[in-house]
Length: 290
Ligand SMILES: Cc1ncc(COP(=O)(O)O)c(C=O)c1O
Image: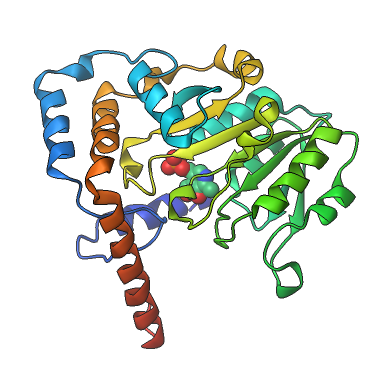
C-alpha cells in the first residue's frame, strides 16, 4: 500500500473510534457555547450555505480579527485554515532562487510548500538545552545569506511550545530589516501562551501574521484561518486568493464565537486545558498509551 494511503487509513481509523479520548492534533474539543450552536443552526435554516463568501472573507470577521489581534493598521484576509494561508504565501512569495529559513523543529508543511516552488529551505536546530529550545537571534544571523527571502517562525513553537520573548523579537526584527527579509509569524497557538508578542507590532511592513481558529476555538473541522499583513504584501497575495472555498455557515460560527468571547468562556477553556494536561501527565505516569 502506498504511504499516502496508509497515512489516511490511520487517521480514518482514529475518526471511527467513537470512544477515543482525542488529545491529539492540539485542538480544543470543549463543547461549544449554546449561542454558537444556535447561530450555526440559524445559518443552516436560513440556507446561507447557498452563498459564496466574498473573496477575502466577510468584512465583519476581517475587522473582528484585526481588533482581536490589535493590528488595526494592517489588512486581513480570511482563509480556509492557516495551512491554506501558508500554502498560498509560499506559492506566491518563494521561488527557485530563494531561501526560506525556519527552525528545527518547526511545523513541517511550509517546508514542503516552499520546496515545491524550488526554494531552498534551511532549518536551524533549536532542540536541546544548549539552545534553550528556542532561536537565539545571533545564531539566526549566521545562517542568513543574500538569497534569504523568508523567515518562518512558529511561535509558540509546534511541537516545543516555546515562545519568543520581546527582546528576542526585537533582535530578530533588526536582523530581518537589515537583510530585507519577510517574516511569516505563525501564531496558531498564540492564545495558549501566557505572554505573546506579535512581530507585526515592530515590523508591520514586512511581517505576515498567520492565525487560526482551529486550536483555541476548537473549530478545526470548519477550516478557518487568517492572514494579517501590510497593504504592500497583501497586494501581492490577494490577487490570486479567494476564500470562496469557505461556507458562510462557518463564518456565522466563528463570528458567534468571537462575540461570545466576552462571557468568560475562553477563561473556562483555559481551566479545561490545564485539567487535560494534568490528566495526560497522570496517564503518562501510569505508563498508558495515549
Ligand atoms: C503551527 C501550525 N500552523 C498551522 C496549522 C494549521 O492550522 P489550520 O487548522 O488553521 O489549518 C497547524 C496545525 O496543526 C499548526 O500546528
